[in-house]
Image (cartoon, rainbow, N blue to C red):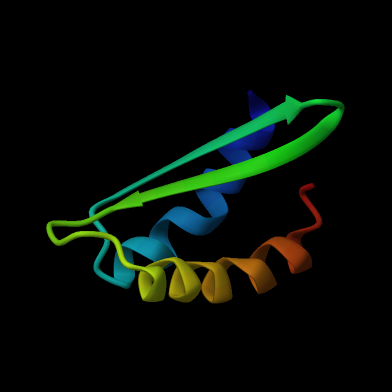
Length: 68
């Protein structure tokens, strides 16, 4: 899906610079609503702090890009 590729191109490098090893994106419709799922991975377990840090990084990028 084009939107997934565009979002991934926008957020992948900044997330990798934070020390994560893998980033993937899924944009899908569930019960009539569209959701963007961002998946990250690293050697250690992903913590709630990791989720918050990634969210705080990508939220402004996504808002400014107006991709979705």
